[in-house]
Amino acid sequence: MKPQRILAVLAAILFVAAVALATAGPRSVSLAGALSYVNPRAVENLHNWTLRALGPWVWLHIGQPLMIRPAWLPAGALGLILAGVALSLPARDATRRSTRRS
Figure 1 (tube, rainbow, N blue to C red):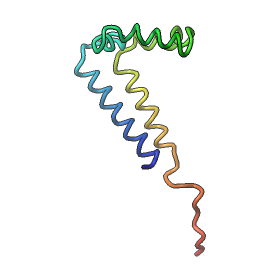
Figure 2: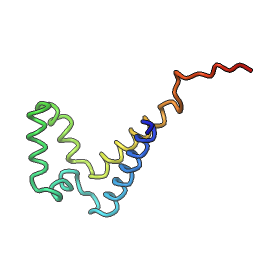
Figure 3: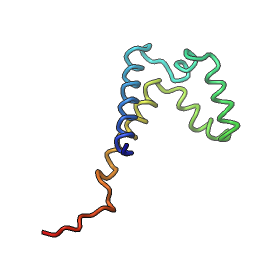
């Protein structure tokens, strides 16, 4: 399967998830609230893993700001990025060129 198609499918899945979170959930539930709804210790586990694996600055500058954003925003933003990458990739293999001349 082409990487372009895989990225487009992942972007579509993330867009559907973002719309579902925005419409089905409470009006302005944060990402931390949505994660703690799935698992009460999810935010704490994510915090501990981030500190161990990536360092405290990642949690301070990336993790905490993401946790206070609406739950649909990270899924929608990642879907938008993947859709842009999928559209930016060349449609066909650039190394294969036609040797036929008119």
